[in-house]
Image (tube, rainbow, N blue to C red; front, side):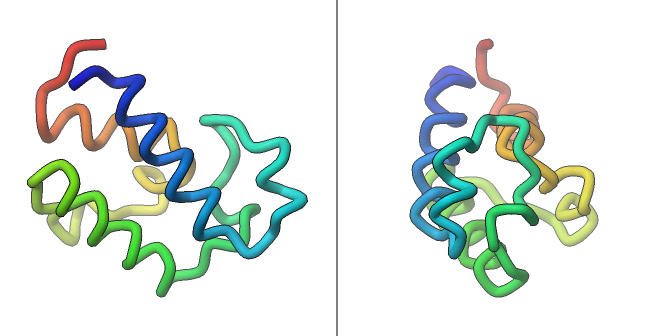
Amino acid sequence: MQKQEIVQFLMERVKAMSTKPQAVETMTEATEISRLGIDSVTLINLVVEIEQKFDIFLEDDEMTVERFNSVRDIAALISEKISVSS
């Protein structure tokens, strides 16, 4: 799996989970997740989907604000966990 496939998956899931449709319209990989109306409960649901989709387990210490700031940051974390090509 390539990094772009991970980003695409994340973009689709974050857009679907967002409570701010107007923010999603201009969303990029670098958009802060918090600006999209993603709360802590929704973020946990996203983590569960990520773990299932990529067959990984995210440790508590990996789920930091810095690692989950944007789709780009989350994709980097996933890429590290599964060692994907760019």
